[in-house]
Structure formats: C-alpha cells, structure tokens
Length: 381
Image 1 (cartoon, rainbow, N blue to C red):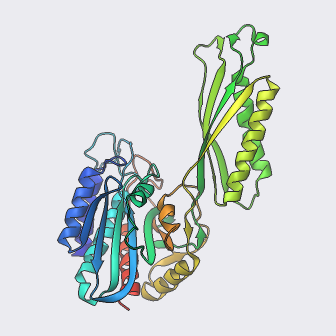
Image 2 (cartoon, rainbow, N blue to C red):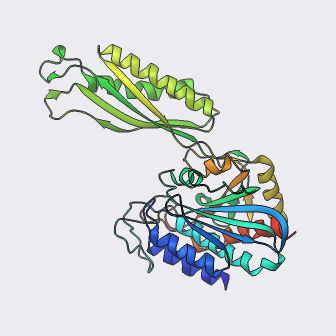
Image 3 (cartoon, rainbow, N blue to C red):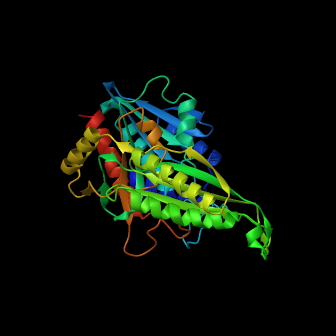
C-alpha cells in the first residue's frame, strides 16, 4: 500500500518539475497530502516551503525530516511514460524521489500515531538548487516556536550502488564560495599590443597561476577545488579590450582551506596584473557552509540500521563531496545527519543533473526503510 503510493506520487512529482521558489503546484500537492494524513500544516514558509507536524500520543523526542522540492532548467531526455511535462525543466537531481520517500514516511508515521511518542516534523524546502531555500525558511520563523531535537535529510547518491546507504560522521559537503575578478588595462589595436596593457593576457596568466598555486599550496589530504567557470572580455578579434572579468568558485571541506584559497587567488591575480602593467579587483562572496553530520547521531544511525535493517549495506567513509547543500543552515542550529541513499546502477546514467538521469525505484524503497526505521527508533521505543 505505502510502496504503491510512493511510486505513484514520485511519478507525479517527476512529471511536474518546478524551478526554485516557484514550486507552487508541488507545495500545494504536498500540503494536501499532509492534511489528508492528519498533519498540522503550514504553507508559504520561505515563499513556497511547507511544514507538517504530527504529534504522538505521549511525550517524547521531537524529530524532523527535510526534503528539497525544486527542479533544474534541463530538458529531459528520457523515454519514460512519466517524463517531465514542463518544457525545459526536469527533476534531474532526484528531489522528486526525496519528496516521495518523505511523504511515504509520513503515511507510515500517521498509521502509527497512537503508538508514537513525541513529535514528527517534516520540512519540504524550496530552492535547494540555488542554496537559498533553507535560509528563507529560517528567516520566516521555521524554528521560532521550537527547534527539533534532531534533524535528518536524505539525498539519492549515484556514486554508491542501489541497496546501500551512506552515513558519514563529520564534514560531508563543502564550504562553498564564488568570486569575480576584474582585470583592468589599456585597450588598443591588435596589431600594436606594445601600446596596450592587455587584460586578456592578465586573465589567462591569472587563471593558470591560480590553478597551480591552489594545487601546490593546499594540503593534499584535504579535499578542495578552485574552478573558473566564466571569462568575459572583448568585442572584436582585432581589438584588445580594456578589461576582462572572470568568475569561479572555491570549495573545501575545511573552512581554513577555503580561506587559504582566497589568499592564493589574490597572490595569483595580483602577480598577473603586475606582469602586464595592469590592475585587478577581486570580489569574493562566501556561500553555503559545509554540511557537518553530528558524530554521535551518525553513530546511532549506523548502529540502529545494523540491527533493524541488516539487509542494507551501510557505508561510513569516503563519502565526502565538494557539492554545496543548504541543509547545512539547519544543521548549524540542530544536530543533524544527511544520509546518502545509493542510486548507482549497472545500466543507465549515474550522474546527477544529467538529462537522462532517473532515480531507480529500489532507491525509494531503501529510503523509506531508512526513514521509517528512524521514526521507530526515536518515537516508538
């Protein structure tokens, strides 16, 4: 019964993807389902966020689950019958599966309401893809009445196989930031470069130097990356422009590594600008913090699943990634764990944000096993 419901609503979500902060249809469907299941529901938190609360019949822990809701501006390229009906939008990151699993868990918890001790809270968050939704929900009072004791989130993860679960204590995702650097020189004719101060030469030298410095001066045992994603400058093949702009990102599992990379950017960019007699300006914007899984809570989950779900393979190391995940803002306030649910498959695409990526059905069943086991462990024992 729950399994068929989960599959059906997953396909509905997949057919109707919506952009960040525009999850109107999605949030309405979620609210309707939560009301049907007997949850107290609040909508419009963080613009399109939905929160449901289910109180048990006796006092106990207050646990919360979070699911993201938004999709990506990708044209779907699958042949499934439930493919996206919204042109140019696709649930290519599997948020449709997260919502379906959490609603199935809500149905499971609702059926046990008289046996539950404590409170089960569910947070359906908008705009994870632009890492803005969690902050928006907190700014509009998500935890103003009462913070949960513990919080859990899941994400399908194609880097581990279907049937496995990833729970790693400590840092799991990256401290993420973005930068914009403007190199300024003197423009001129392409035939007379000696009369110009070439910002294209500055920018190209700066990028290569920054890549080298980050690689040579960073701790090789600490995961970190600096990437340039945009270079803009010039208007004609034979004109040297007077400025060039580059944009990129720096990410690291440790904040100290991130701060060091910003220092290295200044060194590389300053040296390149001086080499070609120009100047530079660097604007750095700190982004989402790292997801740091609570160590004791992660240990409890691993032990609990080992006893209650011995059929699942639980991985506890080599899971850290340099992606950004704004559930980190919640975990800064509440002890939490982000759980990876294996979605890697022998055939098919194993890459998030790919136009042919689909979450295997078995991944949903594993996710439900994990979330329902958490409900049992904290609110039924």
